[in-house]
Amino acid sequence: MSLLTSLIRASTQFQQAMEKRQAPAPGPDASATGAQSKMAEAEPTAGDDRFTPSDSSQADLGRLKSRNLAMTDYKQSVGQDLAFVRETLRHKLAEYNLHPATALNVSKNETGEVVVEGKIADKTRALIEKDLNVNKNFKEAFSRLSVNEPTLDFMDNALKLNRAYGVNNPLLDTLISENQQFNGLQDLVHRYDTMRRSAGAEQIEAAGKTRAYAFNLNARA
Image 1 (spheres, rainbow, N blue to C red):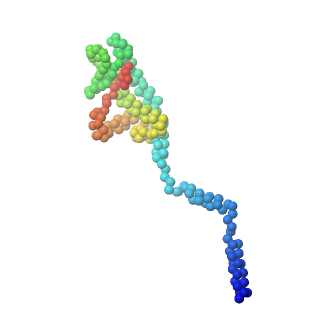
Image 2 (cartoon, helix red, strand yellow):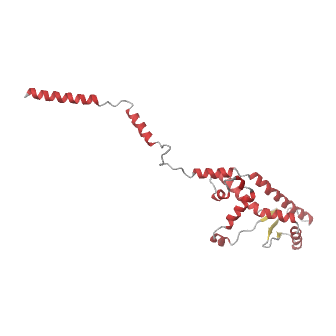
Image 3 (cartoon, rainbow, N blue to C red):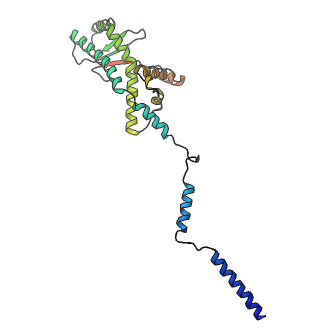
């Protein structure tokens, strides 16, 4: 019995020894290899659809479109009409012996006639209105300003906020065409006017009516 017990014990020890030899011992790089494997599994591949792009791509597109706007050309075009209207009014002040710093507010009524307001005598104001209404060049320049300047002001302010705070204006993005051939000043003016006209009924009722354009000389707008 003792011999049989010794043989069984020896056989068991031999089997255990063989199993230990067959199982490779963990080397120093085993943990690193395991970590690298996990990292490789976690890294996205080209076809991995677990990761979706954020809205930053849309914002980049908006910035790209606005960056291509010819703002300098727009301002030069509007600036010519501004200078002409301003100088015409200054000449009228001098013509009627009014102080050069007299404040004037010029707008158009519902019939398209030029209306002048200011702290001047009614008779003098009526004469200036009459002169301006028969001045074809003045009326044309003022009509262009009444649509061009509000559009340019909106675009300029939106772009300044974009550069200062990195926030895109969705209305500006809608206003600008991806095709630069359709981003002329008159194209932008038309789209801006369409956007204003397509405002909801609640907004129109709350505002009463759109504020008419007015040019201010020697006074804040």
